[in-house]
Image (cartoon, rainbow, N blue to C red; front, side, top):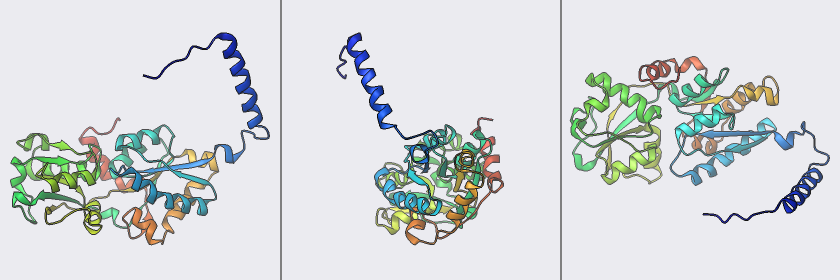
Length: 304
């Protein structure tokens, strides 16, 4: 517990007077309209277990947006999916690289919010079902019925590719909700990379995650594909997207969101695209994710 020092009324008054005087001196010459004092475009992305690494790679993204848009830009990491949505709804961040579900949730809460861009791969995204090598399971075109009696984990409860769509396909294949179909309680790792490592270690026998995260972890040597095997690939669905808060046009002027959209679509730098694990950025609109919204409503994952 921190020590709390008692400050007498006279000393407190003197302290406040001095503080106000210093603040007034520091703010001399500044007005409320000073853009450098208030205007910072804050953006975020879906959570990653390694926030330090994530912040470093999105720092380059911030530099790019600052140069293209002519405004100060800052990346704000978030601890989980719910935090990303909450910060967007509260106006703490105005631009976010959301998953399909979290994008739908954010736009559902913020009237006028727009999906403006997505990876060229995102209209046809898939999830991998993965298994520890000791299970003996191998890749199959058919849904892996044998996982019913195995220890299974999703990613975050609000992840599109790590929970929502795998749940949908499990129910489609078995006729039951995953919590009812699996004989053991299902887990929630909290992030795609954590799901992969938990299955690789054997802490969970099977799991579901974004194919992009799995592929990138194998490519970078962070995951052993011989210990953590792909056993099933889901049918395609729409997923990740950049969503813009309507306040951006109020802060920076009408048409600013369109400028962000153009800046994102124009990205050709491989380093920036790699931060998103995408090969190209294309335009997006809210209607592209209607299917995700419909499933989320069925599963009770939207507030209204």
